[in-house]
Length: 276
Length: 330
Image (cartoon, rainbow over all chains, first blue to last red; front, side, top):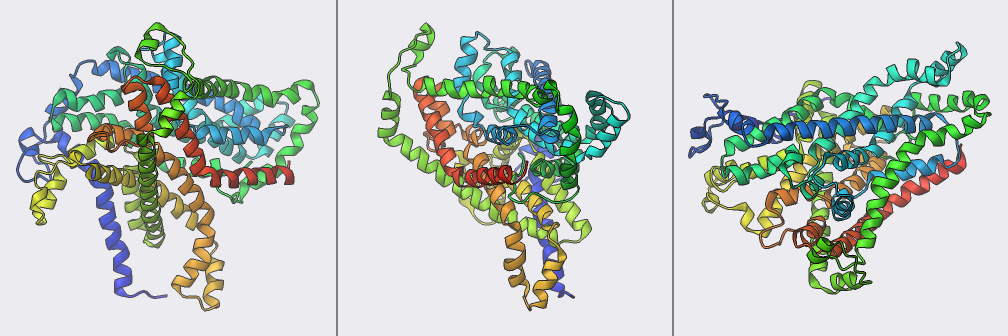
């Protein structure tokens, strides 16, 4: 079927416009971060920075407690991802490979847990943590982040486990492996891409979390990067260069991770939808 | 973030599923074997009860208490029955915020689904290289962390030196040259809506595109043999095939957008004059901000009920389908 010239041109033209629209905010963030202040506050915007400066990044990283926030964010995020992966791996193996009473009930339960309105429950979580005298600590934060990403991790991993042919495991067991050994030597290596994709979404969720840490940790020593980023403007007034440098620093790890793992991650999303 | 569809995708996974009931049987004979799945699920269930069930229950309990600054400092528990609920439900404010939240969610979800659907169909129509380019653009926007994205939008829509005001001024709308987007209810909502739609379209578009690639080409051939034009084959083949995906993504978007706390709160703190508070922000500002914790808990619980109500239709489909599968198989 031959399409007219117009029929061939408009999809590509629309795609170009859309692409610019989606990329522009990200581009503008990075461009502003590298522009000298004079270019940022010029009457007409400087679309393509020619003078590059790292001054804004210096301002951003020399802000009070910056490295504390980085350490806190990394600690909380990595621990939450690891804990939820370990807990989920056990659970998803049971859900994908074993037959038992109430299996569907568990699956429905985790599906509902995945929709938990965390943003709305912060008052109750604040009271619980306060009654335990654990405000301004990273422990409750890690625990709740683990739970926030756990249901998603279980459901997605279940799809990945189910996708590993059961025959492989059987033949390992025929060859004399115990079920545990079969799991460790056969399934786990095949699961690696799935684990990576799943942990990426967990990482993003925990890295981004804002509402809970806002309420629980008022002490700068126990705060994380999202709080630092939102308070940046209050501290630095209208220093958009430094604010955008801060945003860039916050976003870059996620952007890189996501762009590289995107394909796997998306297939992981669909795998999670498979009902085993 | 899982997309739960009505149609279990077919393929290699089905093969794995059929094979799996066999080998487990002989080993399951032992007592340990019968307990194993429950033991494996125990940590996950314990975590869920402790870290999700307990806060939910706590919220319900708090909502029946008179808990303000004074009681908080003294660690006092004062039960006051349904006073919080009567106060919330008889006042105007709660209903205004509820209506605003529902309208806000409806507008954002409708825009996201409509535009996201169009972008998804466009992806299916593009050539290989152009599709890859647009896909990368979408992925970049999708990956942008919410807090960073909100900060960037504050800069794009900044009163002085903001690039949006500059463009509007150059296009001839000179009164926008120094416009403060945060000073007005509607303009704040406008920016938040642009931000949310920008962030949400990639998920819808990429998933929908992935779904269109699974439509068997024979269906289109059959449709064109029957003399169907482009529009006809879209409504008779594409749309019915995509319906479960559309349901699933709409449902997810409703949940995500209804509780869009971060975008609304960090952009303008629910301002100006508390006019852009949606339910989660309202619960936070009443509860934590104004230190009416019991009241905040009541608002939070009502919010959860409203969310369940909004998504009940889809939840029913999923539960029914799970039950049917349970009865059919296993």
